[in-house]
Length: 246
Figure 1: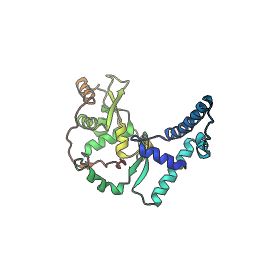
Figure 2 (figure 1 turned 120 degrees about the vertical axis):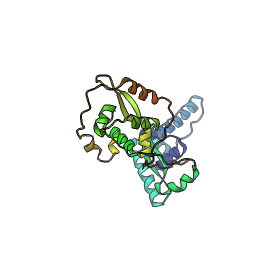
Figure 3 (figure 1 turned 90 degrees about the vertical axis):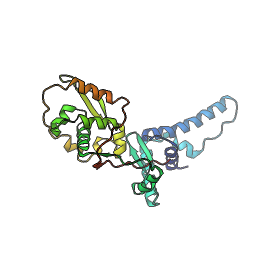
Figure 4 (figure 1 turned 60 degrees about the vertical axis):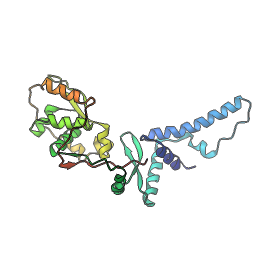
């Protein structure tokens, strides 16, 4: 039994993404389970069953070996022109339908429409993504306009969240992206954003020294807890993620 086939079975059966380290642990756990059975058989006076050679070889499965098996699987999928691939998400690896089949898969979900955001909302999201954690005042200093409504929309869509408070006068809220943001745009971390290294070093305009309005901050904080998505102006489309295999 090949390691790549075992990895494929684990990812196919799992509803959640599995990290490389977790896949290696699960493989080793199966070998340890077989060893425990042999030990119990010995203690009970039974002749222990022999551990298959292929299973014994998996006892030292490493993350590097799993990474190689994942690469082999993706290579075989590409060569066989399969409709799915293995994609690494923030929480691990997952079997995903290839993007070119997205329009067919969408027919399974006729009630779901592509989410669209206005240009200002996308600008606000980009600033938060590249410079997180960041205060509302700093965002407004870059955009030059108030962004309460844009932040509210992003909170409602669960693409951003409140990550704490800054050590500044008034203790303004800090905003950062969520795991849904990474999942939605198909990236693993901020480093996967285009020109991430350069843009995160660009000096931003200094926000005004005036402390944020307590009422506005309180409303935004409360909106992050159980609020319903608000309607948005349809101008810029957020690309949908690839569809997971059921």
